[in-house]
Image (cartoon, rainbow, N blue to C red; front, side, top):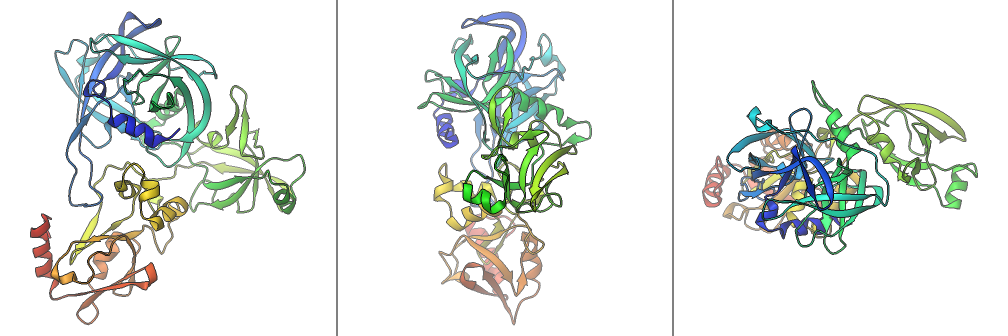
Amino acid sequence: MNMKNAKEQREDLTPIFLALVFLLVAGPVSAGGLALGDNTPVRLHVTYQENNYSSPWKQKKAGSRSGYGCVLSSGRILTTADIVKDSTMIKLEKPDGKKFYPGRVEVIDYDVDLAVVSVEDESFFDGLNSVEIDPDIRVDQPVKFLVMENSNKIRAIPGEIVKISVENYFLGPDKYLTYGAAVNFEDRGGGWSEPVFSQGKLIGITMSYSGKEQYATIIPASIISRFLEADLPGGYIGFPHHGFVGAGVRDPVFREYLHLPPDSGGLYISSIYPDSSADGVLQEGDVLLSAAGFPIDVDGYYKNPDWGSIDYRDLFTRLHSPGEEIEVEIFRGGEKLKKKIKLSRFDRSNYLIPPSGSGEPPEYLIVGGLIFQELTADYLKEWGDKWQTKANKKFIYYYTYFSRRPSPERRRMVILNKILPDRINLGYQGKADLVLAEVNGRPISVIGDVKEALNYPEDGFHRFTFEEFDQELILPVDSLPEADRRIGEQYGIEGE
């Protein structure tokens, strides 16, 4: 399932269907043959404004979007993170349409594309009942996707679960359990947080949809429940990460090299992320034989009693919380060993190249028209829907293999975004997307190091050294104040 195709589907939605959101409320309703019980639609309207990571002193044009949601027993609303991402205003509308109710994002997790919205006016919930979440599902199970017709009448579009697997999520870098369903939204768009029901209970909400394939990817109820459980009084604790890179051990020559027993499965640990759950417990070269009592096969799958073969990642995420211990069995040095891993969340502050979704404006520094900032997934996505093939190849390489690998020498990757043309940088114009290594001979680890290094010019000049072939750019210190003022006026940059 191509997530980017799903995004294209969303952009083609009409305003009517972009404005849909579903909550579950009182009053028996029947729609498309599904007894919905207490379900009735309301509308949620979201105004948003995204940061401009290519020109970081700007914001993009404000827009609006809407999506589905469900009333929770806590008196809040469940929706997807991409509905409320970068929101500046959220308004909820009840079925009678007589009043708008302000809402705000209370909890959001971009990794699993889920969010909780609270409503300031408690009268909004008068007459509303909460959804009942059901984690039980099977392949071939019939389900219903709720949509709303132009007449505000609920329609339940039938579908069928055809796949249960661990897949990439829409906004985050990791893989979690998903349901795949065959469904035809009949040119209604679809794939943007529609609630999905079976026997009157919520079994998930959609994350994406391909009209060409007539296939929807669903965030399962069990992921939703774990997300809600992670919202503790002391704050949201998120989902744990296993902390290593693994590969299957099916190849017979590789197995012989590892001296694995003939009847043994396992996952070869090729790399361990620093300061992660596995750091200090597992070692590169270990073979993971089992986790939480479930044997791992030669392809890295465990046998789920209800769904069959499921990727090993599911054992570390959906079934556990950060802070819990999980027992693993490994093969190391010719013998089997049992270890305990204390699971932890991979905090975004620990990324060399952070994933999408923080919502915070990017930090940047402009010196003589040279724009410096830290590389993020949001910056890469400025190349468009096909950014994974169109973005700077070196950046993609770093993001793919080193995004979780900061070091004491480089906690973030600082880059030269581009150069704003001015006479002070004549001859350098056109240079862009370079990795900054040093400023005035001082190593750069985070964007703040650039500002600090500018306090130490070399003989009246600033020297910027880049990783690519040791390229250097030189700027005269005395001319910078006037040049920065001139560039700020020319390009509308406040404070420059």
